[in-house]
Structures are given as structure tokens and as C-alpha cells.
Image (cartoon, rainbow, N blue to C red; front, top):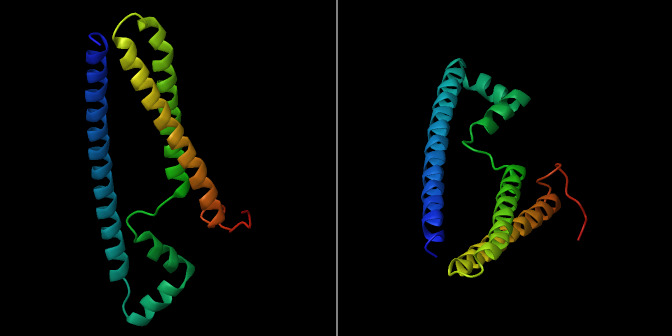
Length: 153
């Protein structure tokens, strides 16, 4: 475990810092996008001279798209499913790598750490992949993917 602890600690710290940086950058991008959308929508609404003009605009196809764009973030099942597949594949590969490397540490205490990390990563990876498969099936059945509900059971 003397060799494994610094490696796992370093990987954990780097992963945490990467996650914090990614979250921060994503939040900044979302704030900028929201501010730009609000400004554009405000300018567009200021152009209407009467309530009837606004009503006519909002009932048109372009107006419906405008109303849909006012939502800050629309949930995309495919994006979330793809994210689960990506994380699942990475964790599964990491688990297999840890379990494969365990044989190199067979005579040391690091072997148990490798088995633990490999089993945990593999289980989490398979869990994410199963979650993605179930989400895909449910999304298709509910009509969230391909825009139509299927009659599969």
C-alpha cells in the first residue's frame, strides 16, 4: 500500500480539481449565455408596440420557438445518456486496468488496494452502462427520443 497510496491520492486530488474547474467554467458559460439571451429577448419584446402584436407574434411558429428558448436549459435525454455511457466505459476500463495490474503486486499489500479499486471501478462502470441502457429504453418508450412513443414492453 506504500506505493499505491500516493498514486491514488494524486489521482483523487487531480480529479477533484478538474471537476471543480469544469463546474466553474460551465457555470460561467451558462451565466453569459443567460445574460445574452435575456438581453436579446428584452430588445425583441421592446419592439412590439401593442399587446395584439405581441400576441400574434407569440402564436406564430417563430414565437413558439422564442418561448421555448426562454427556458434556461432544456433537458436532453441523449446528452445525459451519452454522458453515462462515457463515464461507464471509463470506469469499466479503469477497473479492468486495476485488476490486471494487481498481478504485478501479488506479493505485497498493494495487491488488496488494486483489487479494491478494480472491483469498485468495475462495479461503478457497469452500473453506469446499465443505467444508460435503462434510460435509453425508457426515453424511447416515453417518446423523448425520436419524438414518438413506441409500443414495446
